[in-house]
Amino acid sequence: MNTGRSVFAQLMDFIPSYEFQVCVKRYRGNRYIKDFTCLDQFLCMAFAQLTYRESLRDIEACLRAQRSKLYHMGFRGKISRSNLGHANQERDWRIYADFAQVLIGIARELYRDDPFAVELSQTVYALDSTTVDLCLSVFPWAQFRRHKSAVKVHTLLDLRGNIPTSVYVTGGQVHDVNFLDRLAPEPGAIYLMDRGYLDFARLYRFTQTCAFFITRSKKNTQFYRRKSHSVETSTGVRSDQTIVLTGPKTKRLYPDPLRRIRYFDIEKDLRLTFLTNNFLLPALVIAQLYRARWQVELFFRWIKQHLRIKRFYGTSPNAVKTQVWIAISVYVLVAIARKRLGLEQISLYKILQILSITIFEKTAVSAGLFDINNQFELEAPCNQLDLFDF
Image 1 (tube, one colour):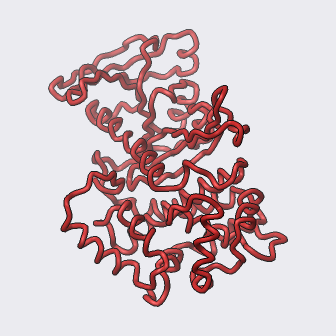
Image 2: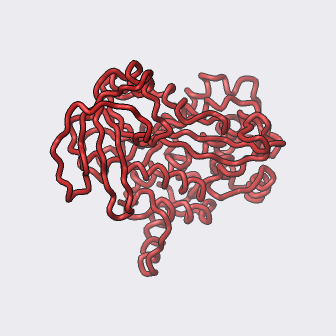
Image 3: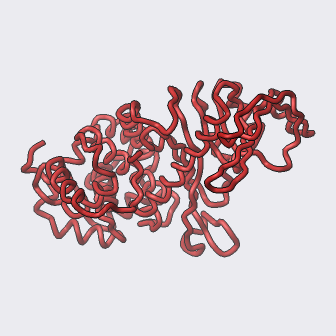
């Protein structure tokens, strides 16, 4: 990369420009636009994510202070909070949702061979959601409780590289299980989910499409034990059974056999009961896979700490969804740059922290990160959460 260009411009070089324009044209994002295009909007929001800006006024002030550098950073339109606010309000959020999927496809290919907690050839996904509390008077469309609003971010996370492959943004009143209606199960893949997704009619779709699921059982689940398999209790597995549901509705909604595994977690003193349609993997591997589901919880905690998704620059559904999707795009874009620059030994947290203060510097981004990482290694180890360290 040219060291005479800013770090921000070098990072934005990883954007596939043709695919971005395809997404813009698909929804006519630049129609009747003479100034401040969709690319300008994306760059402004990406800058806000990377430098932790608090508001539209904050974004405007910081960028205008570096007016002489903006052209070489890729900006072509006039930067103002009114332009950015209007763009977030009016331009279709699906532009950035589709572009995020393009980046996700690139990132998944780069991280496809990364090690995983369990030695498996199949793709493993974790499903979950996180809730961002909002003010009811400002976000009435997202009413969650009687006196408050919330936005819920439903996420399907590929555990190889911790790349979010599908994201669904709704009001807080939408139940988690509805996310399953938007999924097209991938044959042969394994989906990890908690008890909030226990809906046998929806889970039967996974079996019909030759996909596998692992979830937790509820205490009131009615079943008949058809067969018991031998287990090694020293591993923590207490039982491994083939069952058939016998509930008045469940036996009709899920007519095929299921596998029920009881497991005792010695470390946490927990007794867990799993349900799965996978009869091939050892019972202990099923338990280990479910433990890996915790990666999606760490992902949510990480993005809430290091990306701007807890406070929004606009109040409309379109503005909120635009900000969430651009935040995800920035997360994946940095992950792509990390891989292509050969910076796997540097955590994503450190990269984002360094970028936040060097965004206008004219130095090779890879060289700067290598130098600063060597300084970090001399310091005491940090307890900061690192998603990409295994």
